[in-house]
Image (cartoon, rainbow, N blue to C red; front, top):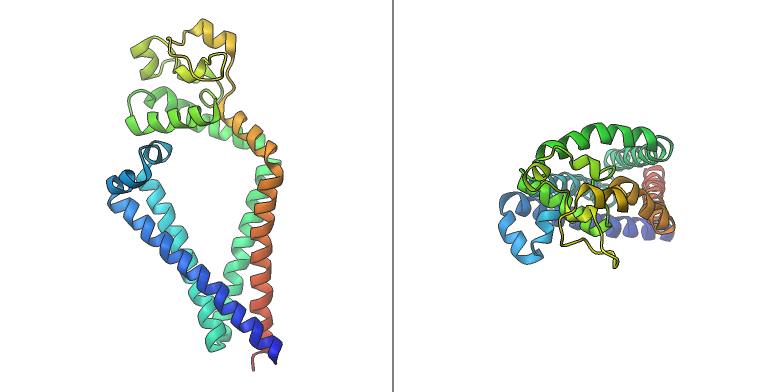
Length: 241
């Protein structure tokens, strides 16, 4: 009986934390969507160039709503010993866990297919919008500066883009100095061909492989917490009268 009471208490505390995280994410998501300018003043201009406010706001709202509902279900089910709530909590967690495993398998097995799909989607957008759409241009500039990469594949992605037509050169990130920083001189086709700065997709894959232990550890930790929560909810469900 003491074991049951302890597990029930831990279930309530754990889901209360999930509930509070959901509230915070919901609040931040609504704030970003409604008043992105004040968000910018606090977190600086790089938060704007790294991601587009509306998309980030909606993502945070969606994630916050899921955590809010999940935490509420777990707390309510454990506190009131409601079998229906506990079973619903278990199945939602199970669906999330299966979706995460499926995404991981697809990412590992179909990396090449994903690269081809993203290439068909992103490269034409770069050619059409880079240099003319401010937000899109800033997102790519921040990405290329952070990862020291050029375009999705390489400098050729920017050919025929509004930026290339206006400046008759490629973005400075496609030509690096000896110290690894972007050049201040015009990045001509000859310089870009000579340096062959790696595309951002391959650079991202390289960084992920370099930090595979950290990424795998975080993923395993999240998966372990989800499995533990499912086991605890099922234990409570089976021990309720």
